[in-house]
Length: 364
Image (cartoon, rainbow, N blue to C red; front, side, top):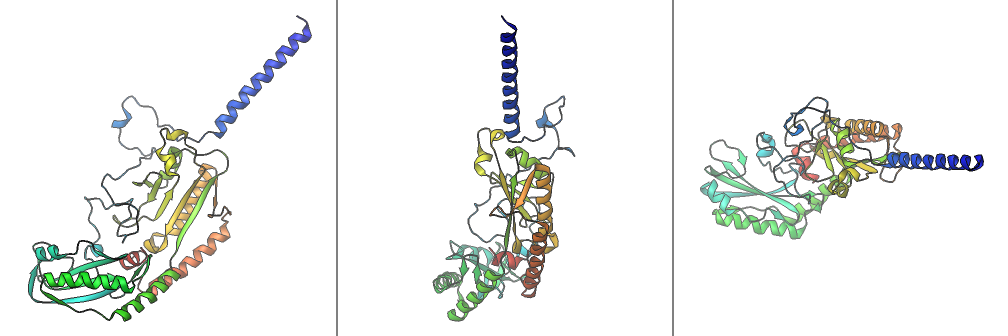
């Protein structure tokens, strides 16, 4: 074999080796990033308690309703744990003339809570609007949803004037009247209904205000180079305090008080989270979301959303954009933050402070 043939053979081998090395490097570079492996131990990891270094995602085992439109006292991903008390402000029901039509029901005598519960309508809605019934407790003199074993000297039935589905209309008002009248007849009470046209007009006014002062923000975090695996996203988000929701591909930053809506939501492709081998799922973007009226401004939700987005972008090699893919720069964030402060002040001035019970009901 001539020296030229040997040289060509060696050169060909080197080229082939280079191609193999390049393909291996390219494959590794473009593969979805994986979470850091936990430190090895001499015993079963499933028996090990949570450590300070390894984030543990907790999924609440209690069943919750779906994500259809409803009156959200609690986020679907954060059901109130049975071991923790629900805030008393939410337990009283709290019909309020600011956002409810209220029909008082007078009684000839006392009615037991058991009888009132049995007289409740099968569905507590008039069209898309929640209906609530409260009784005046004989012992403490407070309005509350009927409770078995208690006695009540009067009732009031209410329907919400507006929510994110729109204003209460004439058909919904008529359905409310039918339900309230049926309840009153069963407990031998006499209801007094406000004038329908006045209440419908009031509903439209409230709906116009709510529509003009509603805000739901979203940031999109996009991968610069390599995609992310679900585990990689979850691990990085967990380091910032996010916990897993009940919906695959969703995480939330919980509020300080149990049972309240989450401060921020984080979501990515549900199909990627449900894949047979999630480690091979490639996620190229995720969304951070904030439902402004649902979260108390004292939680600093926009600041924390902004900080979370910046940290995740830095740690995961991504960029923060709006829904159209436009980069969100610092000056743009500052403008959004200033606008939100004005919105908070306006809601406060109408006794609909963000995160309050009334605001959560109205903006639902």
